[in-house]
Length: 451
Image 1: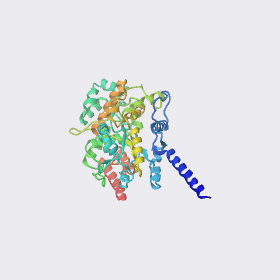
Image 2 (image 1 turned 90 degrees about the vertical axis):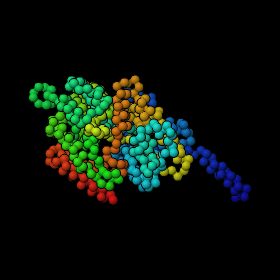
Image 3 (image 1 turned 90 degrees about the horizontal axis):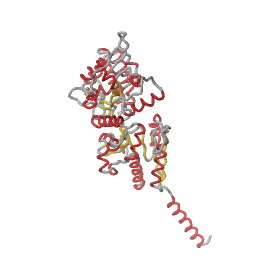
């Protein structure tokens, strides 16, 4: 080949390379667990699938940024942890992810990007403080907040107001001002009765189950109990405060008879079913659970006496102490990016996912968002639901706390022992102290193995 031909070939290849660079798109990959959110314009008579939202929002972002290609993957809740661990091990993790997992040790390993520099002053004011603090490590934040709260278990109670009015109890005062454990007990007595006149109690104030951990944990924490010490190196859920809280729950069943027997064998759906059928006057949950009442009534999935609209109220509190509420938050996390331009674009996508307009789409699931301004705009035109959302948001914002330790705390390994301790306490085979002592021993064995 002549010198002239070689030069010409070099020029052609160089031009081809430059063209390919110009035409190349930046690719952003993200994972999300199944959230059946209805995008704008989605048919009202259809149920959204798990891919409708991620597909729609990826396409919307690409319209704004034609030079970017966004690829999403919907990962099931049960496989998320395993799949993420494998991706990290092989360095094939996504750029961005939303899911049921978070591990602060990823920060220590240098795997995640802090988001502080990408939040505006308005963001800092608008996001609930707990939604940011839940994912803070060494003074930096690692999650763009999105959802705020789950189905409300352990967060708030549901009151069937006709029963309260029948018993002469002012439910509005409870919603607005709360109630102490003493007031709660006296009201429970008024809401327990024999409905058919056969001399046997068949209607109770409420029910709960040993497998219904979130709601039981609320009462235990209300007495001042703590799961572990500050650095999570030792579990001490057998303190006098924890024992007192568990004893109060047992007394509701055995001593006062305001809760039906059989707690040791009941789970959360048994508890919900009792409330749906009006065998109890109180249930547990938040806006999501209210939405489920309508869905289950229409499908006749469970036994229903009627389609009804309960009101949300805080859990009772010990005199002199604040109520407590389980406040689960979630959002979008960015993995470490070597290229600044790519990092900025991934952060831009995270901001797009969590902007006010797109965050408001969580309303289709009856979920609250992590933005106070968005929650204030939800359910316009629906005075009932708007009132419930406002109360639920205030409860989480004022009293929200983590029930099961940090994201790196091995609660999932301990949970079965806690359930076993509750079953033993409610069945009477162990005292509350013995039951919680058993849990403490087993939980601390798990912590010891992790050292």
